[in-house]
Image 1 (cartoon, helix red, strand yellow):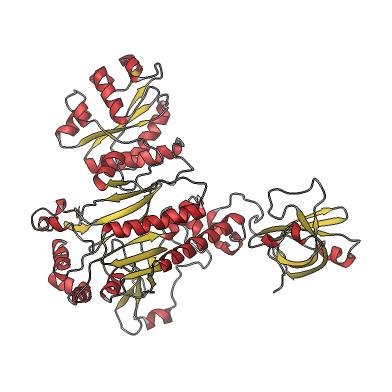
Image 2 (image 1 turned 30 degrees about the vertical axis):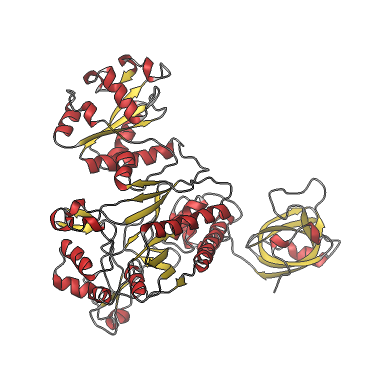
Length: 597
């Protein structure tokens, strides 16, 4: 090794000992005779002092050092002089008095400061990601990711799970998103698909009798990117035979509880995790991944406003729609401009508009409220009792702003649910010391796709329906429930799973309800149906997003921060400039001709 110690190993116990360190020059300071540099390695910094009286040649060479030069320094560990200790550094009470310096490599001036936590354009950071990794924030996230993956492996190894790698090149099957296709050179006109998840593979492993499987799996989805989504991502994939929902959920919950206690001992989290049904989540929070770090629930006020003369409310309810509202605490004094921005925000989430009602802060409770304290265009159509009922439904108090959306129920839920999440963060209502885990259960099995005029699976088509609701598939598929469950953390879905279908006849029936022809079923899923005919055991599992989990654990602002080499928000790899054109020779080998050629 070119070093005797890493920075964390350097402390006062080594005073007067000879050591050798190696790393990058983080900072250089010339104090008129003495030259100080901070040497940075993977784990931290240590101060090195070059004294011309100890080694003039070494001191002279130190004068040539610049930031990001790679160096090897030998010297003696010494306590820093009284008053010069640095409590912010783990090595802050000692320094190394250098007697030898070797410059292992020089460096050009970096395109951004590495030794400062300053804002840098993301595309520039990603283009020079190898430099970005030297910054403590990025380095610490990568180390946290390593710790999370190591913890997961140790946990499932303790439970006698078997880690199995599944193929990357496979067959295109419906999993809820577009596939990435890989053309075959050998089989002209045919394509592999990169896996959106190892869903069918892990089910086949259960048919194969492995019973307990896990994998840190690479997955790919050709979707538009966003803050919590990337074209390629990593998930913990788990599958078990002879289990119920409770078995899968309890093993997953215990994993999270142990992980939180080990990695975030200062944070709070519920134990056991609360559970709410899908319908409760949509009714109360307008989302199937609610952030429970704050309340701000949706209030259904349809029955209160249905018989008023306010046309927007009355007509919506009469046509079968809903009128719901949320209370924004302390926002009663919002200006007209601020209200216009709120309306614009709601419209971006699908609402036609947003009605507001201010309860001015002239009393301390609803008992003292009068109509003179209510500011709204709808106020003249409501009486005081109705206003109080609305306030009770939304949890509003004097000083709060109540905002309403009137529309079809899915539109209302989406608009107010997204508005709730956004305003909860803007108003800093979320408890930063709380990891608000929650299980969401009892999802519908199917959703109607009006564009395609067919049913599609809410999770995926391999999810088992509730046994006593299988007859509904023939008469009223919308009412059929599923054996699916999601784990949600701070408003993000970090995992989802289900008990799977393990009987060929039932799996075929689901495909039929989804309007696949018999030929399509056999061509796309015949291998799975055939496997189920050879004694497939009951099985279930879960998939957890490792990137998203590390994002939440680290407090990162988006998922790109926790992936070593991510794509940018336009799905471009700035470092390698990918995707890139293929050569004509490559296209000819693959029997592909571009349309514009």
